[in-house]
Amino acid sequence: EVQLVESGGGLVKPGGSLRLSCAASGFTFSNAWMSWVRQAPGKGLEWVGRIRKEGDGGTADHASPVKGRFTISRDDSQNMVYLQMNSLKTEDTAVYYCTTDGYELLSSGFDYWGQGTLVTVSS
Amino acid sequence: QSVLTQPPSASGTPGQRVVISCSGSSSNIGRDYVYWYHQLPGTAPKLLIYRNNQRPSGVPDRFSASKSGTSASLAISGLRSEDEADYYCAAWDDSLSGYVFGGGTKVTVL
Image (cartoon, rainbow over all chains, first blue to last red; front, top):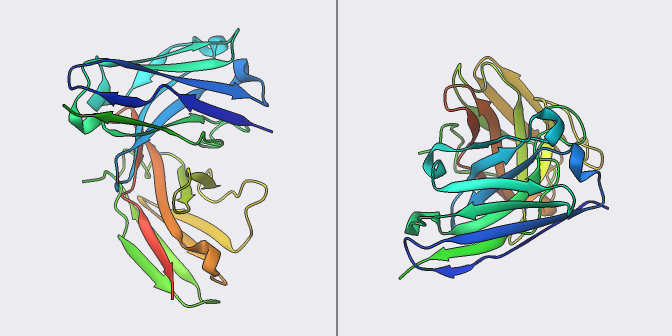
């Protein structure tokens, strides 16, 4: 069974940093592209960024609102994907979801989702 | 303001058919696949449709989708109370170099 478990959320002051982790199991993690998607309280979904599998270069893309502040990385030896968030703003307050990105088939979408972790940016 | 446009709400009685629209542009829906996700209250989103009209295993055939030009739609036939959820369309946007979502449509079963 595929499992994605996010952790690391919490309360942080504007300008602060936080690192989210996502532990993956139940599938061949090294073959998976991974994405982060967030959802502000009472709002819709917003893509944060993705990281390719090492075989496709292992590089990451980040959405414009977070580019230069957030960094996605992965550790295939630990089946983990990370979201390093710096210079946090109040508008970054959201539940952050870890997802697989086209794992089952090419272009199969965000196939699997974690339960999410809440990040609150407030003074 | 979301890049993809969905109606904020839709409703129907049990057994009815509900259709949700998703409007985009030539840089997203017009050139790439459309995906649909649903989110039951208090839970994480789940994939409902991929590659415009394909259902992952386990998704009932009451859910169907289509795409034409820069628009797409999701149809729910034989509406059930458990279909009450938020529904989101999504696509890759070449101009933004990222995935974009619709604002979501809340489906209510009357």
